[in-house]
Amino acid sequence: MSLLAVHVGSYRAWACIGAVAAMAIAGECLIAAAMRKLGDLDLIRAKSGMRGAVRAVLSSPLFLLGATCMALNFFAMLFTLSIVDLSLAAPATASLTYIGNAVAAKIFLRENVDRRRWLAAAFVCAGVFLLAK
Amino acid sequence: MKHRLTLQQYLILIAVMLTASVGDTLLSRGMAQVGAVDLHHLGLLWHALGNAYVDCGIVLLIGFFASYMTALSWADLTFVMPATAFGYVVVAMLSRFWLHERLSLYRWAGIVLIVCAVGFVAGGPSRTEDGEEQAAHRELDIMDSGAGR
Image 1 (cartoon, rainbow over the protein chains, first blue to last red):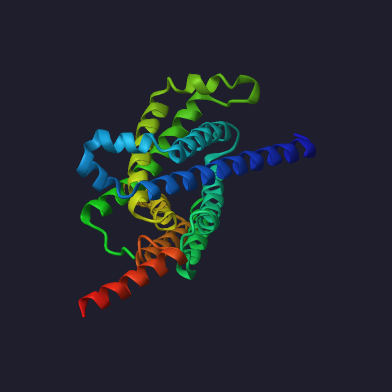
Image 2: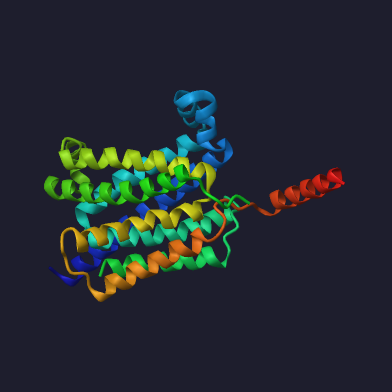
């Protein structure tokens, strides 16, 4: 395999990994915002039953948008797994997603991401990479 | 701020940990059987849905999705995230003690880091409030203490 082919292959692999992570971050933030807006699902289920809880979730536009992003993320991950080894794809997408989620949760969800949570996100990234070695 | 979790909420977090890691492993095995998918043969992704491992993986990931959404309804995204990472530790421990595989020093170090991360977050509140909500709660607390006098 020529050096150019290796370079293009590597670029394509990282582009796929980046796209998977971006869709996961968008999906998780949208779903988290939807769930936060709805409130405790256990309470909704106790009050309106399982059907009421499912109806409440499915009628949330934020949830539908987030679920669409997660579905795209799923197919993108299947595509990525067919060209990149799981040992690289899983930890790389997971690490990018953890850090991206912490940043997005701070900016968009206005969560109080204190030093303890930043440290946790960094430890998870490092830990996932070490597990893949 | 909500801090203490009920037994049911802990069970949901355990379901988040287990279903994601096992589901991903089944998907990986299924896609290895289906073979490489390229941009010109995207239809193979639909063909993959006929694979039993992919189907079992999808069922587990639906279970993950349901428990994950339930967790997000009473906890922050940054609180639930390390719980999903703990699934990697579960898989590593299963491979060590059930499949009797050898774990390298790197992997033990990775396990220690993820366990520490879960410990950091689990020690804090499950739901945090932004500045405006905190101010509103402080006002309510002041009003409550005034009414109690």
